Length: 231
Image (cartoon, rainbow, N blue to C red; front, top):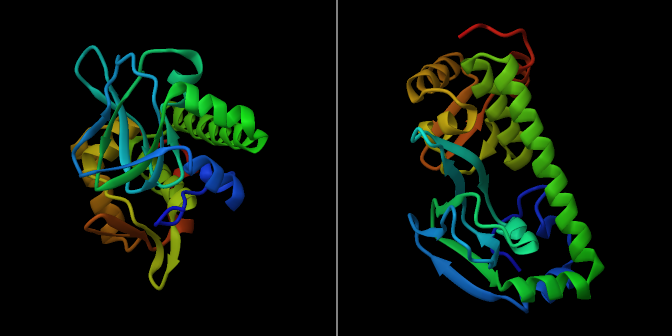
């Protein structure tokens, strides 16, 4: 079993304990330190990783050199599943943001697990559905919102998906940088820094090392849902 709380909507989140034990008992457990690359974009490898602790950054580099952050993945999430299922080259690079423990499966081993336990296939489909919904929401945000609104929407999504109650608001224990947010929402780091500073000054956000607290979630949610500000 994982040593950290599972990410809501993750692969393991949707599995009952006996199914988790079945799956993890068939994987090879590894630990990697922060700053290690687990997968390279374009790599033909087909192994699958199920995260047990720690967070990773999933991103691609566009032809113009711009980094686009696809996702931040944490405990319970599976990565590399599409390449394994379809035989595609890796579509993204995956780097560890902190010490990360994961179970590794070969292509054949992972498919055998899915075939042996129907619950695993259903859980994988449910995680894919969550990812699709997040991707659709991000596309709508990019098309209709200014930078400050996109930052607000990003923080709200992180709080809804990964937050837990704390005395001062919703705590999100995730090692995010301003550049990570900028790469995720398609804005500049400077514009993101301005938005975060504004949210802090207005008492809506508290930032710290490897975490942030959304102090006024309803206010940020309202900002994200308001008309575009043109920034």
